[in-house]
Length: 73
Image (cartoon, rainbow, N blue to C red):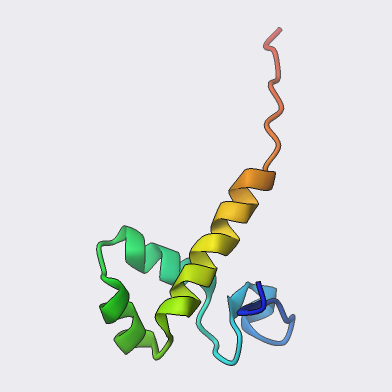
């Protein structure tokens, strides 16, 4: 996770690619929207390893998510 940083002074503390102002959410949204790794690299001037780090970051968040079932009354 050394490629992803969170700094309150950059993008209001949103996780971004280190050394850039490119948020993880933009990368994931671009992938979800059908952009290729190459297109994202060119558009945002990041590497494929940066994209993979964003995916890994999101996967870790989902893996660590806790589900609490609330029974209705």
